[in-house]
Length: 279
Ligand SMILES: C[S@@+](CC[C@H](N)C(=O)[O-])C[C@H]1O[C@@H](n2cnc3c(N)ncnc32)[C@H](O)[C@@H]1O
Image (tube, rainbow, N blue to C red; front, side, top):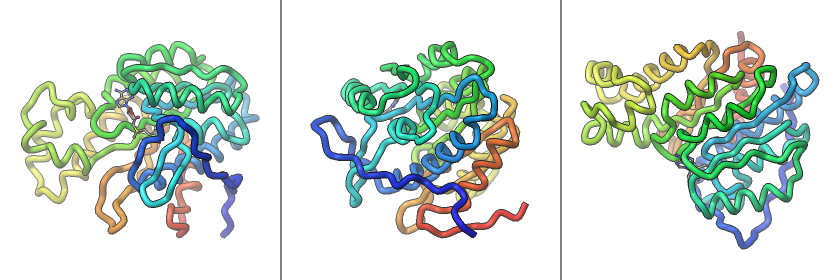
């Protein structure tokens, strides 16, 4: 089986004087899936009659990152900006001042069909400004990639005002489970409640042994997202080198077309191995 979504060979970023966050190697794995999905999405959807194709990145970073042990790599907003079939418009939010400024400067190297919407601040507070800029007849992909528990469920609810597939980097093992017992449990205003959008995970997790907590948490989260009308889900486990689980990449769509694209591109795993989809 050949790779039906061949990527243009991504040349490596060149060093510049701008801030370049040091990141863990697993960042390459999430970008593997994002890059393949965006390439396939923009190719498949470009002539399908949408009034526009938009890319939303609410935790955008600086545009280039320094991957521990691998060197410079494109960050998610520049992966989107460098697409062969360009998005109609990019919508990017970043809270860090220096990262935001670096992102804006780096974006200028990749002229877009429309000037990108760039916001500096808390994505959870600024999401409405993004939604207001995107028309109902457009199709969007939103990449939601916080470091930890920073993406409020309310923000997902706000995004539902437009037609957007979601790719969520969900730290089910990393932050959530390390802090569950001593920080989040029984706290009505905990970050975990805000992220999952319900306190029911408390009871559901207590009822299960520790090795099932991550699974239960993801289940509760996905049920919540389903309540927003999402019907198609897919999952990739992101791990440390020796296989310890960290995050889950969760793909969510309300339509079969996006889910079909995701399933196809996700058959190729970051290490180069393939899995096969029999449905
Ligand atoms: C995992 S990094 C993003 C990496 C980027 N998406 C990529 O793949 O290249 C998370 C980013 O979110 C930013 N951030 C953290 N909290 C935020 C918030 N509430 N709103 C917007 N950005 C936030 C951080 O400064 C950081 O740059």
